[in-house]
Image (cartoon, rainbow, N blue to C red):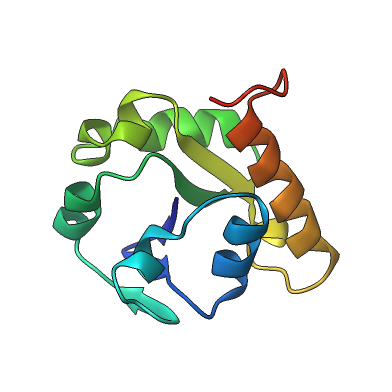
Length: 119
């Protein structure tokens, strides 16, 4: 899983990396040696070919997921091809309090699938 926002990823030693781990994921950016938040090129993201990409949304998260998944480059990733784009409300994705716990819950649900099974 990787958090992506306008070319910026959240690597190790971030709340996102902790939330991803708590939900059962491996932070791809951290696995590539990135600590903190860093800007990377779209080419790097596509080369990593993440199964899940987390982006922010402010209102219609489902529409944001579909729009993002169809973008050039993103559409070539496993996340883009297999429904692995996760749009997370901004107030959860960038929270350090209750919203961070909600992020863990939502990521865990996506990881397990809505029926409790693995995707």
